[in-house]
Image 1 (cartoon, helix red, strand yellow):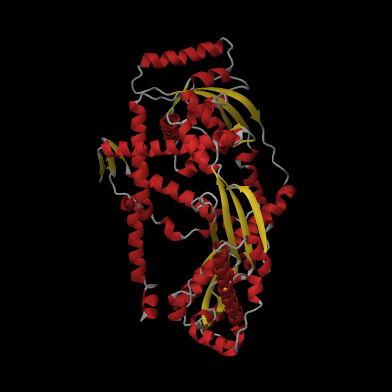
Image 2: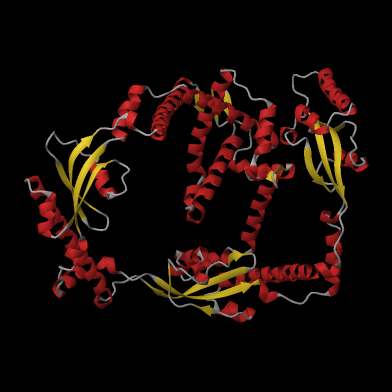
Length: 626
């Protein structure tokens, strides 16, 4: 039945239905389905709206952060919009409350500060200099407009001022520092015995009946890996390469030299004036005239731009906008630039962004290289372009044939393609073509593995496609005893050795608690022992397992000791005795340690204050999630 459904879905009716869906998406936009057609808010915080676009932007930011942090280890389920939107909503609400709090306090940030910060950001710089083109491109990639980014950055700075003020209002008192120093600087005298696992491992004797019983009791632990043997057809662009005609190379060369990279380019700076909503026309014109007068008087364009320009991104670099070949800026600006002489300053130019005064700082003419210099690259591009067209034609044909075929034999015969075959492939294949996660997922999918269908034609990259089917399936099964006997012996030996070590540690602990001395007991039992006086929590001579355990015990009474043991990760037992505990003193700590302790304690209190402040804002706020 599944095969019939697969066949029918390729029919004319199915294609008409898909066409209707495509037209619906094209006419109304998929955003109307995902975000709704209106601009209604998704939440309100003290009367201020959080829009669907803000929520989606926050979700997208979280996705980018997860992808950046997790890389190839990312579980796609972590990118679920519904899961991320809950956390994003809470983040937006908390941020909105902090921004409102900052505004209530009258905190402000000047455009100059914001512009200087943007200009100093490395992600917007080329060769150490702010690049307007890179600035706009990076913002576009992240889903920001320049205005939205400046607004967001301004709010971030305000929130930072609030949090810095809260953190700075908290400090550690001398009494608090002294109390923490008693713990941080505490020292303990330690003696300890090492009971090695290796010594007891050599004593373990494992019999055949024990091996057989362990094998019977733990058969599920000795399953072979599930595996498949695959048939596959592989398509690559290189298989479709053909010689390129000379005329095609010449045409491509002519197109290349007509490209903007070989055209005359102009580097410009500008001073932008944006009229504020509450700014009168006369005030706006006065600002513009002031700039023109100062430039006419000979004042440096960069200085005037840095002081007066409303484009904070370019103002920090003297108004520099980089190069244009005639299509980077609005048509009004490009027309004015084309008419300027080198170092010439334009009259005011009006665009949708505002009013610009433009300076032409550099003009460079592009010189096209000769055909022979570009021939190899152009030929490669043309050959691969044609090959990819043929590849995609073959892919589309193979999709139709493989979708309806019982195996890959008929499609391979009809298209004169070779069928490749694999040996056993497991789910964690580490090398070769089928180490690819897409192919493994397809091979072990229910549709291919259990239903016996051919897979989809899978795109590995634009030049590489694969379709596969399962030739043989090898389910996981219990491996023969002779294949796992060595593993069982090692496991039983380790278990018995660890049990013996634990028993020896219990015996040693009992003897020491009964009054026997560490040195005497270690010597009689043939164990090594060590002593470390005045060990602190950062001691590097004492095993970390002992330090962690010993500093958790209560201090012994005067004239007595505390005795215990720990088992290390490698299986050794460490039996230790704490004979003296000396509390730390703030005055005895090095200056660097005292400063660090003060910073840590103050930071912890500051974080507590910050959390309480956020919670207080939320408790007193009017929050509606719609």
